[in-house]
Image (tube, rainbow, N blue to C red; front, side, top):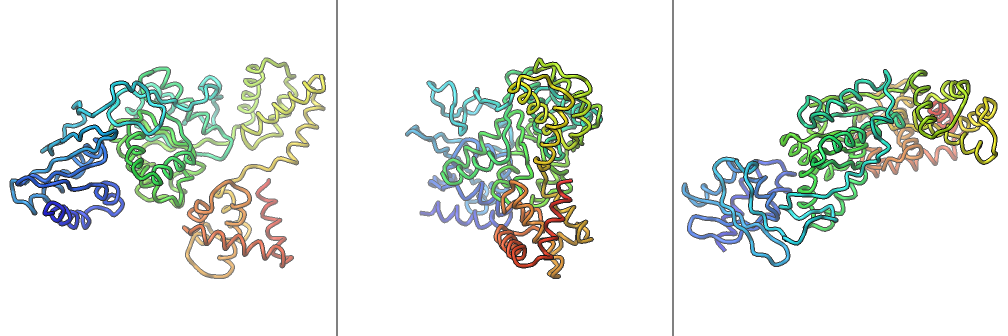
Length: 469
């Protein structure tokens, strides 16, 4: 059992040097196999583990092994292989040249395509559905002053993915302004120009679900990381949803690093710029700032007119310019509401077999504007609550226990719970760095006060009214 003692002594040294998360990810899954003279053999889960250890921890491993077994000590890796195939051994390297070598990964010669997203390491060709909506292309994306910077950067990336200064491209703005459309348009353009590149669009919630599934099935976590590190262009939508999810952030950190260092392209979207994101690790936020952060703003009147006319043309319908101008002047919040109003108007005209008139448009808009609440973000809620109680954002986010500030913070949490789709963990992370239990308590406290305190109930009504402006 000497080999186990030797490896245990090595781990004691390594644990004191590397971050806790890295130790759990890259060293805990390793199993010592045996010692033959001065050669220690360890078993790693996948060939990618071998690559990663050699690239990032070769010096540390060499020093710790030599400390235990002497100056001539050597390390061999035994890669675990599924389906009863024999293990493959790789000796440790003195310098990193693995990226340019064809490592003899064991593969199944009968397997030409992968249906499961957790792929078998070593397959060179991957058939992966990029998850892109063909309607979200550049042809259907209307350019205006509100989005020209982001669109121009996107076109530059499409011409040379991973090789521009816009890596990552961080697109941010309120809901309904076209972040998802633009991000997918870039992916579609890249796929058309470079058919062999692996492009993948995934929203943060789905990424989180896949991560949890990989953790539950312990042997899948390494395959999860390996799969995402093979992508050429990775598009993550609503990255702010990673707030408060430490394990997901840690995995994405390693994926981000690998892709960026390999010259792959990353495109991220969020409702806020990196500097305003809460509940995300600082090391992630610093990487989000490496490339370009481009804001999408509310479209101006002329841009709204162009958006409507483009949709009218694509749908093959005929609407008077005065009706178009009326819609554009009344619906100003976001593109989604603008197009939704046009669809509703067209549906009513078709069902009633009537022409679309200015009067019909006015009646439809009056109904929609009165019934449709503007989508709000946690950031919007924080700003309105701070304004209502004359507090600075810094004070609301502070750890002070003053009653009036605690109450304002609780109101912000309560409104975030009922007005957004964010999880309790995400709300807590973005409002004061609290956990989900604190948010749950805040919601209960506010709900009780609404039912028992008339003046407090008026506070909530007024704040909600301001949010709907």
